Amino acid sequence: MKILIIRLSSIGDIVLTSPVVRCLKQQKPDVSIHYLVKKQFATTIQANPYIDKVHLLDPAASLSQQTPALRAEKFDYIIDLHNNQRTWLLKKALKVPSQSFYKLNIEKWLMTTFKYNRLPNSHIVDRYLKTVANAPFNIVNDGKGLDYFIAPKDEIAITTRFPTIGQQPYIALAIGASLATKKMPNHKLINLCELLAAPIVLLGGGKADIANAEQISNKLAAHQTIVNACGELNLNQSASVAKQAQVVISHDTGMMHIAAAFNQKMVSIWGNTIPEFGMYPYLPKAAAAPQKIMQILGLKCRPCSKLGYKACPKKHFNCMELINENDIADWVNLQFSQQSNPY
Image (tube, rainbow, N blue to C red; front, side):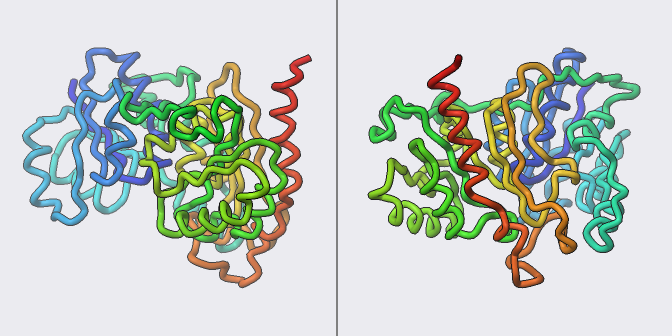
């Protein structure tokens, strides 16, 4: 059987589909798995050994230009883990049986608009897996968590790339997010870094990340070992840095899910979004690393969006401004002290 899995974007969402890919391949080894993704996100899955072929969707080209190549593959089944208008049109054009992921759009709208919680108490990964739980696949969750594979050329040798850190345990701090209301303001990130008792590597790739990281590293240059890797590494190289860190600090973004795939100790910081949307760090059932979720509970305006905004609609940004950097730093520093004194 040849199947096509569709998840077009974005980084974190694609990583969260990895258990579906792995469970399908391991439990149905005769199945040929193809994966359709937007070409700008191809690096997130190209090294995945469970995928037989990756297809790249060009957002600049029309679907009618791109469907003939997909039709020529003669898929037996489509698993649509994106489920939007574009994927509906693709499925209609390919004319093969399909199963689609339910996105909870109504439930999320009720929560963000009226704060009426009809969200199920389940992670999005478990809901992804439900799309293949019945015939013809009958897949069960293997409990192994997420996967993220890095090509050897993108693995970072920390002692060589960052000689100021050398062999010291360090913190990977992913400062970015897709939208401003999902990330801490820079003044709070600076305060947090001042409280951390270990070397720090700043990770991020956007223009805003690069500018913010420069401000943070300049402010703290004389305070402690801090390496500004923003804009210097590609996504998989950043993933390699996160993989080798003692602790990862991340907002609700793709790097949070990548770190979870490596079963990393992690603090996840939540602003306008909430873990109840079902996208908190998804860990293996066995030997899950310690995690801390930082969020401000009880705000009447939160969550204000399932995705985020360029600025706080209420102007106060209390969901981030009220987060206590000392609580984050105390938890992170404790992980280092426990490593030094295991007994």
